[in-house]
Image 1 (cartoon, rainbow, N blue to C red):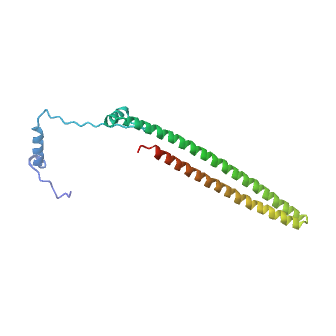
Image 2: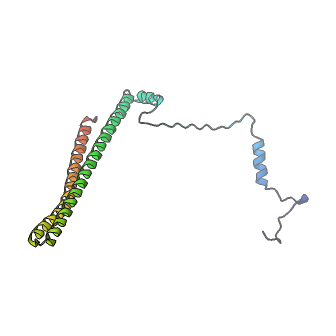
Length: 182
């Protein structure tokens, strides 16, 4: 606010009071003393697939047998989750084993190829160029085959595993749709 602007003042140097505030205050003062306003806030939190017993009881009151169906559904879901977790663990273990085998095969193939190339070089230095070319060709071919076949075998294993997982999932979906109440 600029210095030249001043609020309108009444006696005593106080700013004027808004008259609507006075009427609201008078209305509040005129209210009966017995009037009491209160608010109650309740919150309930639940964890897990099964509701608390009070709510289950209310479900049973609404529809007899509904609480039992809810509990059965939670039990079936827990059993399904445990089965799926064990299958995932088994698949991961198989993947890990296949990966280790593939790596081990590649390491041995690489070592064999290097030994063949080294032998070919030694044969060429000693004067047996024709034998060196056959040994060198076999060594390089072995290296290439080890790397290509190792990756191909791993890829084939993963594709087969994916097909098996799809079949299991389709069987479970078919079983759950047949056992669902309809």
